[in-house]
Amino acid sequence: QSFFKPIQGASPQSPTSQITKITVVGVGNVGMAIAQTILTQGIADEIALVDVNVDKLRGEMLDLQHAAAFLPRTKISASIDYSNTTGSDLVIVTAGARQITGESRLNLLQRNLALFSKVIPPLAAKSPDTIFLIVSNPVDVLTYVAWKLSGFPSNRVMGSGTNLDSSRFRFLIADHLDLNAQDVQAYIVGEHGDSSVALWSSISVGGVPILSFLERQQIAYEKQTLEKIHKKVVESAYEVISLKGYTSWAIGYSVASLARTILRDQRSIHPVSVLAKGFHGIDGGEPFLSLPAQLGRNGVLGVTNVNLTEEEATQLRVSARTILEVQAQLGI
Ligand SMILES: NC(=O)c1ccc[n+]([C@@H]2O[C@H](COP(=O)([O-])OP(=O)(O)OC[C@H]3O[C@@H](n4cnc5c(N)ncnc54)[C@H](O)[C@@H]3O)[C@@H](O)[C@H]2O)c1
Ligand SMILES: O=C1N[C@](c2ccsc2)(c2cccc(Nc3ccc(F)cc3)n2)CC(O)=C1Sc1ccccc1Cl
Image (cartoon, rainbow, N blue to C red; front, top):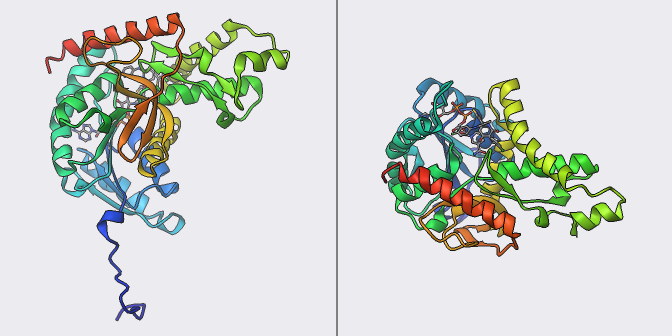
């Protein structure tokens, strides 16, 4: 006996073509912050969780399911293999080996390369039309690895790149100028992390380039102020790690904003790690670096022709060379 008397012709089954499904690989601090934000914002109809830690995986699935009374209806599943991931519209990869104290970044990269070699091919096989969004670090090189291992066209493989760096940059600028961070357009590009590149000329507040904004507000323009803020983007990452041992909320919101832009075909522009070959004089090799990219239902729709100063373009090319040197050591 059903609760409802059926209406002629109405089927309780939703057509699968209209179901939006996201797979999150890795249910650690980052993966669960991303999943929780996607759930809260009603971005997906289905969330499939994957991890190798069976108990954590089931525990996180149950704990999220138990919040159903307060959330948009979303099917939440979990599997240690990839059985539940079939037909995903977006696959977000946060699985990663933790950097062991004193471990070299290259060694960590080798361990994550081995991990990706086991994870990416079956995910791609179960969802051959999906879009990969890589978050695991070192994110730029691992996005390249995912692209190579998946065999997908480059528009369907991106990394969160400097999306988090840029969101911290926007917060710090807004905090410094007593503004709403959503009104601050500011892009950090290039390599995610310690060696990112701040596009000073791209910073605008309510459509007003920040340099003239500062002059109009009689705020003494000091390039070193903005440079200090960019430096603080890096310092704050280390500060959060030293205080709480990991980062989660900011990366969770920043990756969920990418998921929404992609799955709702918003065609918004985000700084994400893309195949940078052919942009801004980056010609040798296949480096993935962050550039302001237009995102939509088919992944990376285009890269903006943002004007770079000679210094910015040079920094970007240096980053590309650094990434290529690391990629060359991977042998893939
Ligand atoms: N790109 C960015 O801006 C950014 C920001 C923060 C963190 N990160 C990166 O995100 C990654 C995850 O960070 P975290 O704090 O969530 O780490 P974590 O250790 O809390 O979680 C990692 C999870 O991956 C799982 N895992 C390991 N091997 C797996 C496999 N083969 N298949 C599926 N799952 C597997 C682990 O069981 C664990 O649950 C790290 O690489 C971190 O550096 C990136
Ligand atoms: O907010 C973070 N936290 C992490 C973190 C989270 C859990 S353990 C470490 C972080 C914080 C500080 C340094 C650092 N370095 C690192 C470099 C390469 C790797 F493969 C792994 C980690 N990583 C991971 C990460 O990428 C970030 S953003 C970040 C990091 C450094 C500089 C600027 C930014 Cl915007």
